[in-house]
Image (cartoon, rainbow, N blue to C red; front, side, top):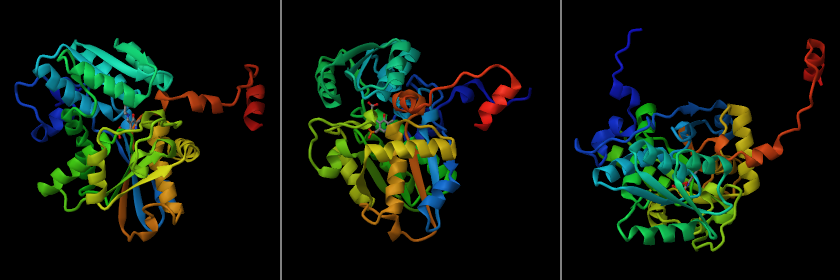
Length: 366
Ligand code: F0G
């Protein structure tokens, strides 16, 4: 078979593709699992739901190596940690950061400690941290408690923090915005995404700004973030002591990048809004059954947000105000198989059928 693909191109991820925008040098050892380059899928049905001549695209980050967008930032954070000679990584997590950190630590050959809020981590994510060999500590507290402990533990210098308070995480994650502009030929008009610790909205905004500054794009999108109603500190403008949501990944009451997220929203003339757990689950199901994209509940917050935005004049930022032609990108952040518990609960019990064609045909027709 003829192939011009070199060994490094095949395994290359976001550092290889966007090296000039990232804090790496020839001396940086590149720890990559081939992250990034995720599909930007045009959705005719979402476009129809949004109406008013909108074209809606879904950036599917669930197809990264560990099934979430975290891998983009983790490749940079872990490469830089290796450059500085670290021996162990540490993070607090609602699940995806820990899965990603554990995988990149394994790839780098160093250890990884993950501090998790007990009982609040989706099954698939916990399984990933185990599978990649991380040291897992479950605390009797929430994500915000876990992050506080991680910050203190890292003060000793024994660990490198790979939460998004590590600037290399944000640097890596901004590459998602680059990919979108590279593919669309310009920035979209609106970018909708779920918000938890608020690192990702900060990272996208940074990426869009850098591309504008380089004149790779001609405009900036309005950033529209969605939080779950029970975990919406930015929307309500106060710390939520006990964040509660079915979308466990974004169950955060005191986001680390709160200020920068606020700045992104204000500067981009965007908005922060809330969606209910019920709407999140309905959107998750809709996306799977109408577009074939199965995402975890937290990721469906951007789709639930688009629906709210399109259907309701009460939404903080209603699409009724927009003019055509408008391009909207919704980021879906993590794969549905990571957080299967709710979907499993909705599965119908299968009826056993005899292994004959007539019986199977009868079962199909029922
Ligand atoms: N979607 C998913 C699937 C996530 O895992 C997260 C965050 C977010 C959205 C929100 O992104 O925090 O940058 O605003 N998960 C973190 C974690 C907190 O520990 O895995 P954010």
